[in-house]
Image 1 (tube, rainbow, N blue to C red):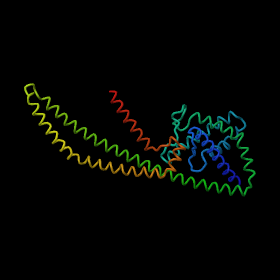
Image 2 (image 1 turned 60 degrees about the vertical axis):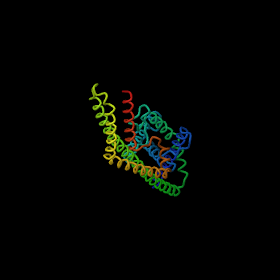
Image 3 (image 1 turned 180 degrees about the vertical axis):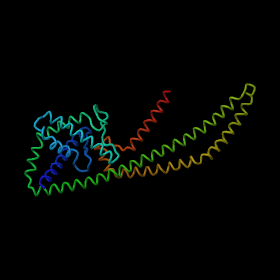
Image 4 (image 1 turned 45 degrees about the vertical axis):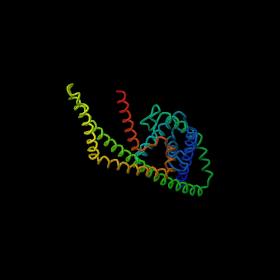
Length: 308
């Protein structure tokens, strides 16, 4: 029992120290305090897992710096990659992206971070862990048991609250992007119908004018007046025929109103969203990524048309 209690304390301690490192690093980069980490509390569980894996899997190389550095790189890189995959599968959200850094693998891990984790593994094994062993050893076993139980319970509650907040946030974000996509499709459909109808009438007008000969030039003014009347009648006809377009526009207005309501609800839950987006600046849902790609493709299409 004492062994597992000690293990829990090590895990909590390294999770806290990992949170400290991440928070200091990101705070310096962003020049403001950033509560770095997945949980609300000051813990980064991935660091606790990484430290324990390095300590217990690399016992045979703990006395040699280079093998420990390289082995630590491999262990922590695999852990980070698997964590990224697991979190994406669980929440359908992308939490970090190293695609802009050289020597990355699918944006999940990169050489720079791996080298930093390798150096951190050497520091933990050779410097930090002996001090932590002495510190924990000074705590009486009954106190260790109580402390481990309390900290584990707090962490469990924090995890439940955080996961609930993330699922609520993701649901609202996905709903917003789906509504935006629906509005975009309806708008494009209506605009396309109107463009086709106007183009059709313009072709008729061109054909009418193209059929005139020099001998009928004197009749142009009369014909133009007739065409203006035809266009006016057509406008009225178009207005009547496009009642469904007006209905679609009204539906679009209603969806926009619901969208604003969802955004207001999202702002009310800003504690969760602010913490997550500050802790993970590259955080995005798959729906937001799909919507962003569609907008990017549309912009590229317009730019290409302007160049042509």
